[in-house]
Image (tube, rainbow, N blue to C red; front, top):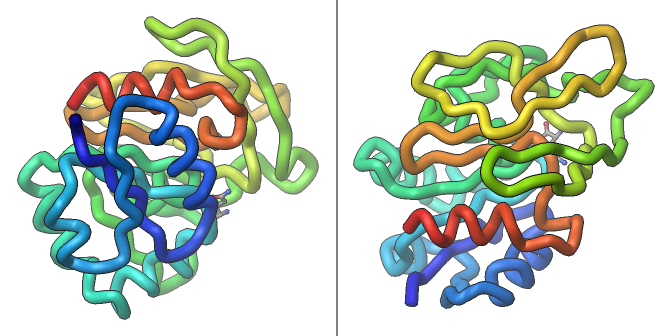
Length: 194
Ligand code: GLN
């Protein structure tokens, strides 16, 4: 059975833990290097990306996770977690860093004020329709060819259709919150890929 970690510094950790526990995996809340070293894969939850980034530094996890990502460690980032994995952040805080594990440029809070939070059906390649819960979500505005786009959405705000669920080798990212919709299929996709 695979040991799947959930980065447990800030954000909606409990919802991811519940999702993963409903699947065939041992779930570890990760706050220390020892916990990070004990797992086969890691989920980076939604929350506040600048806060999680800060806590990664103070917990001494930033570089250790960066090294693992360079070695191809499997991770799944949702919302703020996706921001942390991205290569470039637009409208981020001036000192905001990201891992560059996923070759995407995204705009923080890129779905605008009018629709800061919304729910929309999302058609995911190989899975079908899932419910996408967007909460002040990042918008992927550019991506490299080696990023596989598994779902897109045009929310009808005049800014067009953009990827909302992507994968680049072992690195997965969703701009929405699959852990909040009570549907474990995207977590299953990740766990089955391990
Ligand atoms: N807007 C948040 C950020 O920039 C992300 C929101 C979320 O994870 N729901 O960190």
